[in-house]
Amino acid sequence: MGQVYWGAYDCTGAAPVAVCPERLDAPEAVAPPGPAAWFGAGHGFAAHPGLAARLGSALAGVDSTILPRAADIARIAAVEFAAGRGLAAAQGLPVYLRDDVVHRR
Picture 1 (cartoon, rainbow, N blue to C red):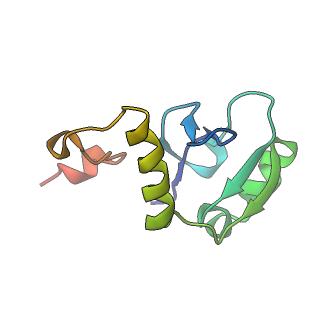
Picture 2 (picture 1 turned 90 degrees about the horizontal axis):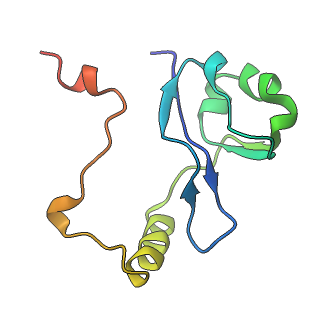
């Protein structure tokens, strides 16, 4: 659909902290928040080669091959659970950024 899923996270602590809502935008609308240098990760950079060039100095680096792995998610979940931020299984809901597409019939 010509869009890029993106979010910005502070990864300096034990678990990543979102610094903006997850988004789905056209590549030309991606704009990481604030003056910090961000690291770009994921297939969006391979699918849209001009994205990294457009973001320029906002990026400290890019790796278009990095994707989330179950082991990484489990490690983050363990930190969150230990900090008392666990949820009952029934409260764990997926996030649909293309909600209008999901509910179209």
